[in-house]
Image (cartoon, rainbow, N blue to C red; front, side, top):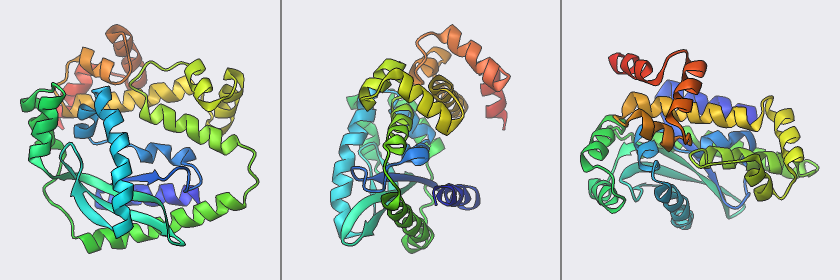
Length: 277
């Protein structure tokens, strides 16, 4: 079911240009596992705002209020940074298992300006990226629910399948590692830090992750960082140094070297090509 969900998410993105993320309530969806990349908002405005780690943590904390509001059903609102989003609860047997977010729309500009001032971000740059990255063409709510309801049904089926499977802890640990990498890629992460967070040995999580993903933890982390860097280079005016730092690279020269190796172009040339498009 997980692969079907991923295909449907890609379909929603490719056919309808929807930015869809999945958020679960305390493991109620059976763990995110390989769905963890769909747990993080990836539009340039969100990435720019979350270049400040405090904002990232604040966003995670405020999801508690979203879960509380889910008890009243689907809704459209603005996050604390001014991004408009549809929220559709995933509910089964009277319990909220999680919610699906469809975001990337212009919401509350006062929240946008307030957050820029509060966290020391350039108001001009914040507004520019907001205008460029977010859409003011907000779809009809019923249209969104029609598209998202099948996804909610698949998530519920996946949860039931997970509950029926024998639990050896492997999927949970793997999902936890993927979640850490996708939400904390901009921090200094070591295998030891991740192992401690998972309450496992470094050897165990390294072998488990390689077996399930086909790559090492560091390779996966580097791929995430380069993907985020490409988005920032294409859609913001952040310097190469700030881009590197925002994506978890402590050395700009090392970032340039890795970026050139992965993408085939140095960051500046990639930016010029992306802007021309």
